[in-house]
Image (tube, rainbow, N blue to C red; front, side):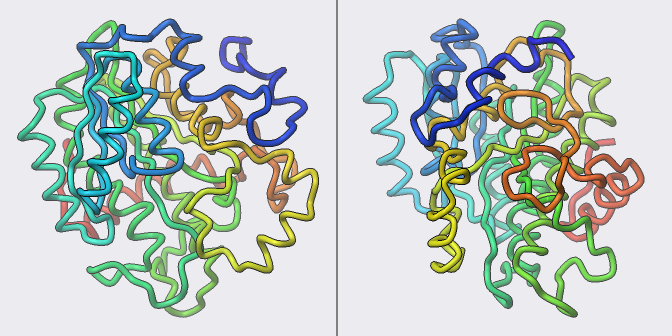
Length: 340
């Protein structure tokens, strides 16, 4: 693998905590000479009002692109939009689309809303998510919340937008899908006989299952639709203390805080959004996909699948049979028919 696929290896080799030498999302834009260069491109980021999604959207706006973010709370989101545009030096546009990822009806409506506003989509960043939600906190349709929000909602949105992604692809810029996953995917593959985990529930196993699903969706898209100009990668963004951790028990967070190595590995949200921004924008990913990314590089097999800080992928991350089966199951569960 050439150095162009691991451009920041030195910066990641000795982390010193949030705000250290590791790149930010905006740095990725400037390093790739993309500031105000993408007035002709359209991007959509789910969950763009806080954390990694906010920083990814802010970076994409810096390219001059027309960026859409999704949010449940339109009033809060409009404040975010106003703030980003006010601070930006680019000519990029930023709009909000209402979407509640706990409701597939809302996701389907959001897809139609997007299509009524834009005939083009070059980049889709499946960023939003929940983590270790308690047992019994299901989606509107009754799915276990992590599987329903992290996977099924993104699957539904992506499946409905695949036609415009295909149509928007050009020989010089193939469309891109970036699916955020987590090193926690190593905790579980897909529990085929009980995806809702009603028989035996563990919030971390449920989270791991949903993050495996994110990887498998990206792998499937790249394998099946790559020849039609749509490429996809999965991204492990690394650790940052954001709202995603709100359900992590306080005692566990306290223990994390005592671990110097773990705290040094933590990033700011601006840094945590760097790998997904790199995947969405870097020239090296033109016409490329089907990879698991971490630390702004192509990931490698994990040395210790249970080690929280290991940035690598688990042995089940690439499984063509599983990917095909999950795609078919997701079509059935979500009630959508994906583009042939």
